[in-house]
Image 1: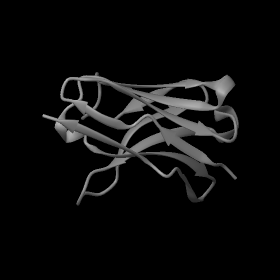
Image 2: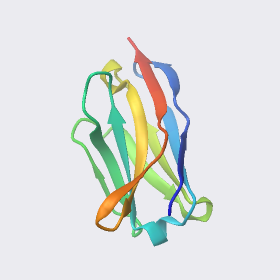
Image 3: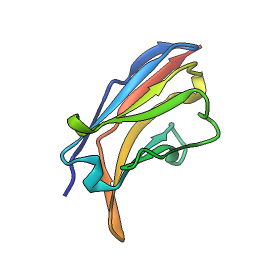
Image 4: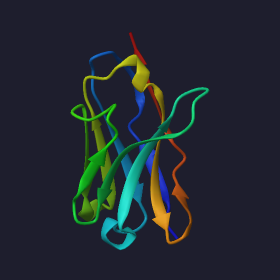
Length: 116
C-alpha cells in the first residue's frame, strides 16, 4: 500500500511560480513511477507529468518547458516545479502511484489558483 500527501498549492499571479510536493510512504524506487495529474472545475482529470524510479521524465504538451518534475529519494518525495503559470493552470493537482493491474493510489490533492 502507498499513501500520498500533496502540499504546496496556493494562489499565485499569472507568470509566477509554485512548487508542489508529493510525499509518499514508500520509496519511489519501490513504487516504480509517480505521476502528477490535475483537474480543473468542470473538466476531466488530465495527465501533467511523470517520473520513473530511474529518473526518466515525461510531460503533457501544455506544461512542457514550464513545469519540471523531480524526486528526492531520501525523502520519498516527488516535486513539481511550476513556472510561468497561466490562469488555465488553475486546478486541483493530484499525485498518483501505480498498483499493478489494479486502480492505483491517489493523494487528496492540492489546489492551485492562478489569477490573471
